[in-house]
Length: 424
Image (cartoon, rainbow, N blue to C red; front, side, top):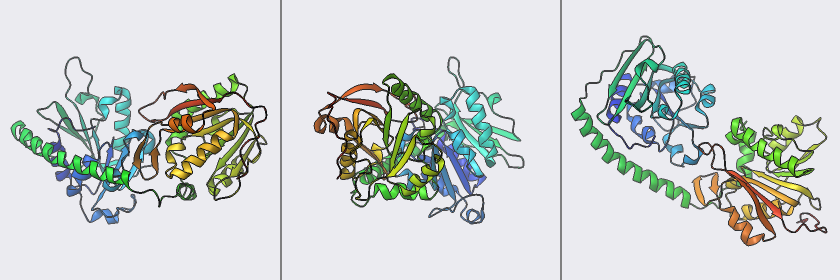
């Protein structure tokens, strides 16, 4: 959580200092405060001999993070954390290794009690020494965690700060408990100091993030980025899995059924997991990644209703002259970093359909990461494609996980002589 309260910071730093961990996992990363503050307290030597974790990179020890809200991704986080996992922490923990310490700062306060206890149990399974949890101090009329809510462990110590936060350390068997010798007065003074330093750090982080957003995109190649990702075993991202994928499938399937859609083309087929949830009579999937196309052709080799074609690279459009009832673009537009690539993509997307275009993306201008550039694409449609009107808009049911929503456009009027996309 963002640090509107600071009294717990000296307590957490003191506990980590006494535990002397080599590796730390922060669950619920936001601005990267802990990724910076905890570096000083990591042991520099044992990390190199820990086979359960990836190489540590340039830092002493290792700090990894799990970021739940995709809208909070900033380039600077990639510099503060050795590895940053994005998505539901329960799913991300399943493929995580062991860490000496797992930290959750104000993260449990946003979860129902049962989910919080389940998550704590998972965190303990990934902690060699301890799990450090920061929560609101229980008080009447406010839901918060009492000590009895925490899982049974070898030992547990807790300390409350003057600003209403409790730091609880759940220790594994054989780990010596840290002592909390800082009184409320000194906690308050140290909190003021951390707040001052934190303000300077926040300004530095904002400057770094702005510099990354303002940097030139001329050397970024969207197609090469995704080919590299798929070739190295990566997937289409969290939006193509779990409840986000189910939400998208429900909207698309209902629309296809309501309007009697027969032929669909998707610009950016990805790894095919989202496709597995769709009910489409005839589907054509396009992608710039040869690896993704090869994988999709293998997965759906026995399904005659689906075909997959490679696009890009300066080659002629593989669907030139064809017409479709619906063009799909799912979680693609904000990954088109280059202006020329974005404009060509939008024109091809709309040119391929004689009836509808369905876009699932954010609709604002913002740059959050090297491979993420949000665009206010609706302005482009209004200015460059006046024959299309917005038919429907569906906000995201899970805005805490994705900033994308549905925009469905209709061609007006339908041209009976429409010939499909150009052959350029």
